[in-house]
Length: 255
Image (cartoon, rainbow, N blue to C red; front, side, top):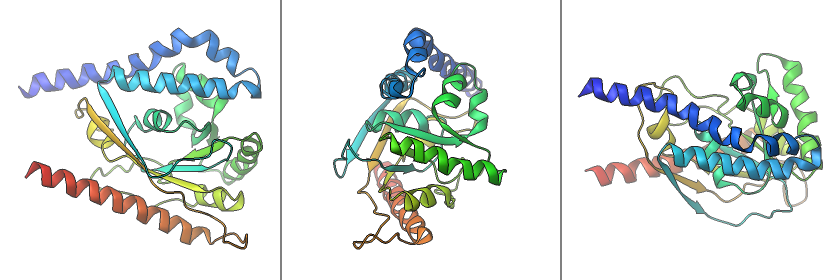
């Protein structure tokens, strides 16, 4: 039985990359056309959301979104969430309809075909380079000036130890949000690690819950920027407490 499960997991993992590529190939001419000019990005974003939903559906995932408040499509935000799975990108795109760009690691640009569009539409950062980290701020400002939002997974990567509920947050997302006066929208993904973690022989189709928390302001009522470290820890606490609540709820159902 164990060997059968391993075969299923191996095939399923390969299928994940196949189902990532199929929608891209189908939409390829339209995707290429949408990245030729800056004005085309909103169309690219819409197609990215279709791609994300196709990947989730193709893997047997279905999602349920709980929104605490409605967002203004005319404003820019900083979207942040816990990072536990390769599906976090897809679920973020499925859950948020305000056009945004990812700030992410350069290694994702190496994924065939997906990487071609990722590096041309996202803000890539080499975390080992201080110059690269500084360039992110200039690139983010350009996107914000165009009315776009920014999305960063502030843990800076998926923790190697999967028993960690939520790793420490890096400063980048909060420094960007405070300096650009972007309200922060925290999202909670409690199921992605269970559904498709970075452990090869693991995962299963099923429900992916999303909870979009109330936005966190980065400036005071008199317009002064707030302390980014305090904002960072406040947002982390909000996400951590929600993850704990989901964990306790699941444990109570299983008992």
